[in-house]
Length: 240
Image (cartoon, rainbow, N blue to C red; front, top):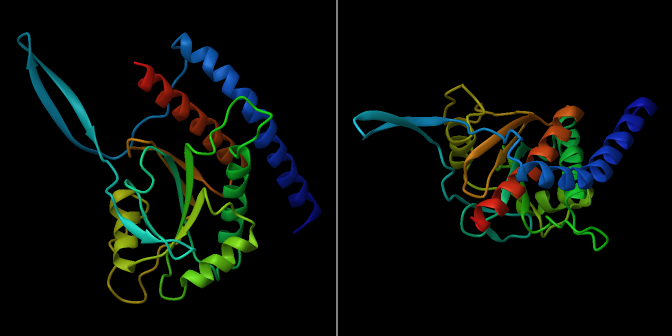
């Protein structure tokens, strides 16, 4: 890695880890005044109309993530909506023998892990609200052992970040149809391969709330900011 890239990575880490906690305070104050724009919803499924007081009112029904089950780097079964119920999810797709894109994606996901880790010196603690998921797009080669080795290479927190493998058709259907990450229909053969730099933000109710370029430092910062917004949104819903 060049000196300039190392410098950029260093300052991005500082921005996410130091500036972000301050944003919690600012967001909390602004949310009380309802002057902040929350992350939107993605992938509408249908429009439902209801007749109220003689007028039709229409609501957009957005796609919700199904409860799929995968296996993580520790050999444990992880279900998206049962094991991780109530958690905000950040999802990316990797494969362990990827030489360039995937290591950068993982380093940037690690910045999010660092930003929201438990810190006894801070009043805000989102370590149990946020869960990171990295799903292999090459499950044939990426065994549980390979995923564990890859995760340990980046020093991930196994309690809050799962590297997942499973049936290839299930993974690809999830990426294409549930997350909308690829327009290509694909096939059943070994030539079918998804490789995306996108990171997806999913709220605690399993609606898609954001897409980010996992290789772009500004988008990583935007993702961190919008994670904190969803946390505040969740707390406000509980109070109400």
